[in-house]
Length: 450
Image 1 (cartoon, rainbow, N blue to C red):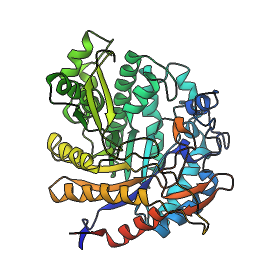
Image 2: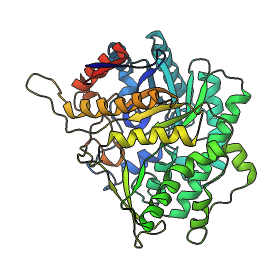
Image 3: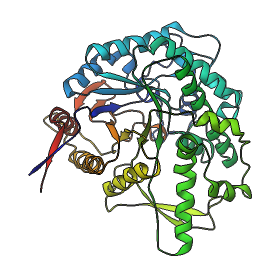
């Protein structure tokens, strides 16, 4: 056996998101979010559920923090619900909303857990959607207003900030495919939303710098390695387009100050591109301290004339599948980490989400023996170690997720947590994967067969 040891200051964390766990959707002055509206529309959520109660983290957060302390979690990535802070998205702020996050962060700090706050994890105030949502450029200004208020109230407590979570998913799944809130199906709108999200990110980072705050700030991108389905020229070009539209479309403006030219050219005759001013790109590329990387699977890409506008179709890579149907391939995760180190040299990476859905059940002894998840985490964290050994600058790993939760369009039918949530009783049960992760954190590594 050989032991893989991680750097001394490596940040072991767990991640959640406000709408997925908090509940308390109408309490203490919280406004309506687009996910409140969307999840209450019949047929939008696969199991007919919503996030009204979720994991009731709004009331049970002290218990959840004690769970994290027991597991040895070094950092907790949570998101702030914009409609808790500004019920109408702008103007009038809600003191009770920010008070919850102050209590949460103070208790984390008291228990030696580093708070890591995400400003936008998809729960846009419905009042802003009523004026066009992120397709309205003004919403980037309202995001800056919201960010500034939160920075003033929590900037001395929170050392790591994430402006946006997965703008690619929010843009395309919510505005082109229509499977997520707000449920729009228009590709050109999705591109406009993507640009305005990145503008909002740039405005928040600039403001953070101007305020002289001493922490780190970046954004979390959901990135998927794309491989051609064959060696023929058409499939190779298709894989490059898929990568450009999903990965480089968000990374390049932030880290290179430009959108990928090959994709701009491809889009130019097929969709309506947003107006992109030179000063927009200067703002979007205001330097950040890290790239937050979310990854769950890799894709095999084939040229497909029937799939407008990219002419690509995709399938998962990996012999085995998670309970949500995603392919498992930790080697592709390693490839992605190496690629990021090469394409964006010097940029620190926090892996802000990685994990899998399993068909978890409580056995007769009251245990949840999720060996498939243990295996998934083992192999993916081993890929992280290998990339570290080869010089990729990785600062930490956050498992998705601390708790089973409301999994967006899947409702409560898919479980990602290292802690099981029995929703009718809100009882928490640490899974086998949670105990395994506890040991990894305690040892700052784990053993592998030579």
